[in-house]
Image (cartoon, rainbow, N blue to C red; front, side, top):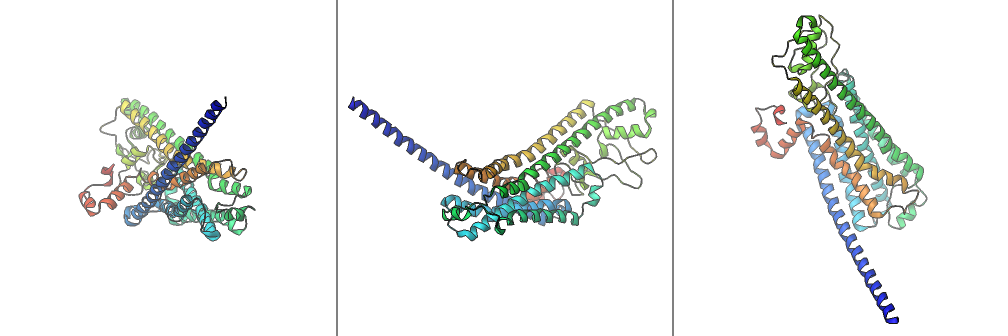
Length: 423
């Protein structure tokens, strides 16, 4: 019996040692993988945002009011890559904070400042797009001063959120954590509620509401064009009964500006390229309005037209009903897909971190340190995605990126072609 008991203990000991070695090996592998991902993330975020800033500063057709928000967003994300990620990587690699309390304050403050500014820029961009698609006069009121005020408010709010711990809003265990070589932003519960609400939860609600309203507007206009198209077919059978209304219905149903020349007395119809569409900042006057309208699935509200105030020219080649309905359905699906990408990337990147941020002050041991690290760097990953998401849908940005990458040869090869041919 004693021999059997000893054998069982030996097997148990071997199993425990093997399990410990496997667990240790797994943690080392996970740690190295996270370290490599952090390096890739830092360089990708840096290069992506540098490209956006360089494109706006060097390309004349991108130097417009609509892109000021994109430029400021890229600056915020670039600061995340330059100020926040490097010190965060040093902290993660060393597994302890050895740089002193002053650098800890600087790192946590710059983290809160830049990440909050990045998120609030997304709110401002959503608000700018919402105004652009719901108010046709907005393009006349969108001035450098107005956008500049929005950018100033973004950075001011971000500054107030980050400066509070430096003014004394810290938890009692802050110095104890530093002695234990840990550097965290203030874990005071009330500060975390204030900071997370200001930096994420309220902006998240605003973004979801605005993009939902934008999508509803897009869908309503697509459906309205379908109704007008049906009316246009009826009027085509009896053109005398339709008058001006029939002509405008036919124009709207068969391609808008491409199918009819509409001139409103005292107020010319703005082109799509003069507005910010729901999903893409469009600014170049050389771009094709029809191409942008088709690409984004949304057009500005047309001004009210009365009889005698407009002229029309019917389309020579009307689009077949099925083809047009298919195009409208495709437009609606693209609108939904684009908005899902914008909101989904934001939520997936930041929601895990801000859930952790609220719960950690309540119970510091509730989450594994590796999980906290993953959630933090997942939030930083949003600064890598932003320059992609907010520029990839614009043919002008794509053209500028290719020009920056390929140099003069690319510009020379494409000097006879407009940006509309680059899609």
